[in-house]
Image (cartoon, rainbow, N blue to C red; front, side, top):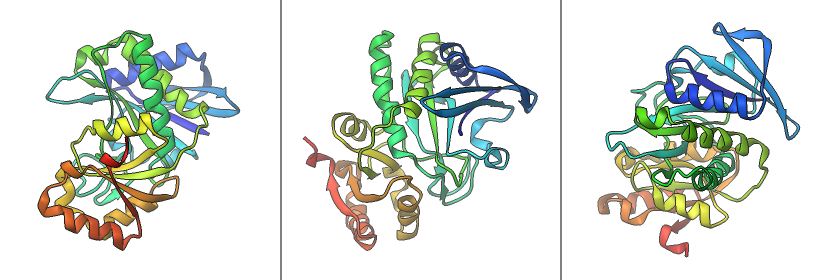
Length: 276
């Protein structure tokens, strides 16, 4: 079973969930969860359930206690100071401390290929629905929950105008479903360096047969050690054998140490410039 989780507190989440229910004819079940209806649909031979929680999704550490699932898709809003319209995807979890839900130095299991399918469909829907001002992007691994099952956040950003936009909600709804029914598989890699929204990693994944799982951004590299890197490798659905470095997005003082940590973990090292 695959679980889609929406939040009553999240405008974008409600928007996306409604587009999924309506667009794919999800049926309401007799059961409820947190006093909200549970919806179900079988697509591509897979059972999908959609539930709504009362909490913000970043605090949904409890979800696996209630549902036995192979993948959790959180449909959510994305908020940023820039206000740039954004369609994004990332794995939840904390590379350092747990300031926004989850557990410290604990990441969820990253469904690298599922996230790549989200990106591919977001690009299709962006063009189809005329969302020309929206960026499509990976985000780095950040915030809670830290789950022992594959999980990803599929989001609309970055302000109320976008959260309420029905076309943006529809685009993310289609991307979430495409990640389930599309079964394309490519090699998974670990991304290191660069900004919170890594456009270079996004371009590489869209243009090459590469799926990024966990992405460790520049702003946490000072805290990177072999233990957390190994944790990210092990907490990826697919086998990870390569680390892709956003070389210009790694401070000169961190470069040697980062390469040393990758070598300790027997990863092939590639730079973004290696992808043409």
